[in-house]
Each structure stands twice: as structure tokens, then as C-alpha cells.
Image 1 (cartoon, rainbow, N blue to C red):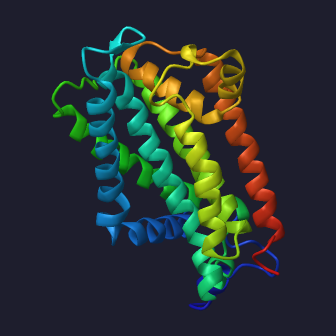
Image 2: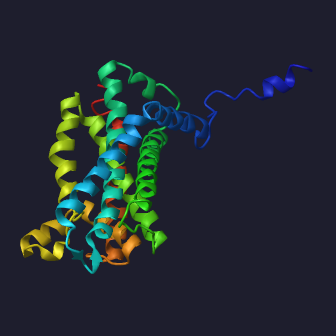
Image 3: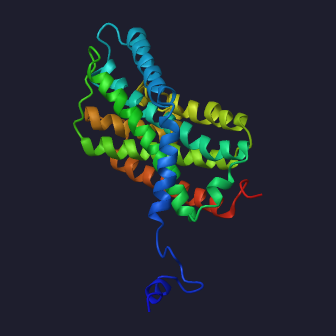
Length: 275
């Protein structure tokens, strides 16, 4: 009789032990990824924040003199929100593009494939950790800029700040995961960073208004998803935007959903991971 309760707890053959979502496993992978970058936080959080602050200093000194204004706001106030979200996006990409790639390079990719995690759970944990790193960098930058002389970074539309910050971090996290799936060595990762992410970041309208550009370049800017992240995030702080905010918000959501689908298919088929 004493053995009966123990036998009843044993699942029948073929009956799933984890019927819906493996919250415990997903949390474990998320915590692992967060601890990985937090162990070297001087490099992963504070160094990007410091570099971005140097950008702010250089551009204010070089371009912000003589009371220069852009779209009716002092140049320092105009450029600060873009620098915050650009730092967040670069941090998200750096984190996401490293996880699976280093596993392939060191032969430890099996640690990601063996646990009882579905494709969606693994993708959610990897993206969630990268977004966490991006948010930490963004908060560090925002706090530093609060005390920066001549810079005003108090949000006026907190919803826009949260939405576009999250969409931007997710965008680069998903691009980073896809890069880490595709890349076979660190040179491949660096190539995407240098020839795709870097140029799109610098040509996103962070340091200028696209209204000053020639018509062709304005059109090209409107095809750059980074532009909508920068413009929408700036709208959250200044209340102005050089793009339709609602279109940008919905467009970024659509792009992220497409990237989620592409990443899911690549992970589920084990493209360049299981072969």
C-alpha cells in the first residue's frame, strides 16, 4: 500500500513530463546567460556606456557649439536619446551574437542542445538575456546623462521610450542570435558588426535630422529599421520625431516578428548547429 502513491506519480510511457512550457529550464538558461555577461560587467556594461559618453562629449564639442539647435532643440538634447538607444542596441547584438558561436567554437554547443528545452524556449532565453544587458547599458547611460551639464534627458512619453527601447533591443538581439547560428568563426561575427550593424547605426539619424538629406538619401533612411528606433526613442524624450511614430512602432513589431520566425526555423532545423 505504501508503494501505491509513489507509482501514481510516475508518468505513463509517452506522457509528457513538462506538458506546456519548461519555465524552470528556460529560467536556468536565461540566468546562465545573464551571469555570463555579468561576470565581466566592466567589459559588457560599463565599457559600452563609457564609450557612448565619449561620443556625446566629442559631438557636443565638435558640433554643438554656438547654441546650435536641431528640430528646435539644443544639439546635446537632440543627440542624447539616440546615443542611449544606440548603446543599448550594440550591447544586445554583442551579447546575442556570442552565445551560440562560442559554443560552436569551443565544442560546447551540446550544452544548448541537450537540455529539455523547445526551440521557442531556447530562443526566448537567449533574446531575454541580451535584452537584459541592453536595458542595463541603457539605464547606466541615462543616469550618467542626468548629471551631464547641458543635457536634458527626462522622458515626456514614457510609453514611447519603453516601446522603442524594447523593440530596438529585441531587433539587435534577434539579429545577433541569427548571426551566431550562421557564423563559423569570430571573423564572421565581426563582419556583420562592421559592415551591417555599424553602418546602419551611424546612418540612422542619431547625429542629424534626415530632413537635411537629399531626397534619395531620405528614402534610403526610411528603409533603415534603426532609423525608426532612434526616431521613436527620441520622440519619447523630446516629443518630436522625423518619422511617423505609429508607423515606426508597428513596422518594428513586424520586423521583429519576421526575425523571430526566421530564428525559430533556423534553430529548429539545426542549421549550422547540429550538422
